View (spheres, rainbow, N blue to C red):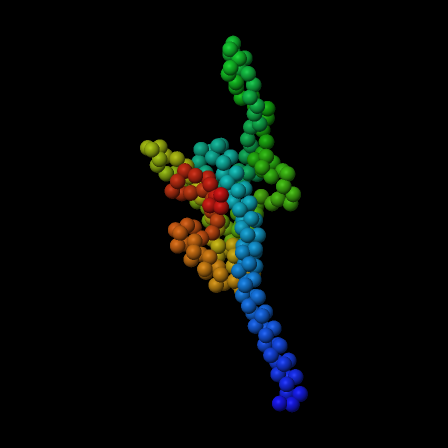
Length: 205
């Protein structure tokens, strides 16, 4: 084997080794990148679901039930008002042990919840982040618990909705993620509230 052929073989083998090394590294890093992006997107979606939950709490306090669609929920947040109260001693109580609520005024729900949030857009809470304006699935109902009809609501977004756009290269990892969650009989995505239980918990909590 002459020197030229030997040098060519060395270069080719070096390139092959480098390509294989890159492929191994990339296969190791792919799930790391997927999980990092998943966690980043989850944090934004979770904040939206928390905002929906907070407005729903006020809505139920004012209406006795939860809003069953975003038009009602957003309109309520825009125009609905809640009282600002403080506890003061009951002037009719000579024992000084009872207190009563003193209403100081009223504030709009949106101002109470979001006035400190820069660039917050109330209308955007209906849309799942990282989608082309796909709405959260939100439902409200009443269920019977111990002979009493109790209002419930649920809002949710699937992993396919949260993690598909811009993450097409991770298609198989998304399939694997959903399969592992469904195997545990859990919702493959993020949700808050429940239509089966009296709960306002998020499934991330």
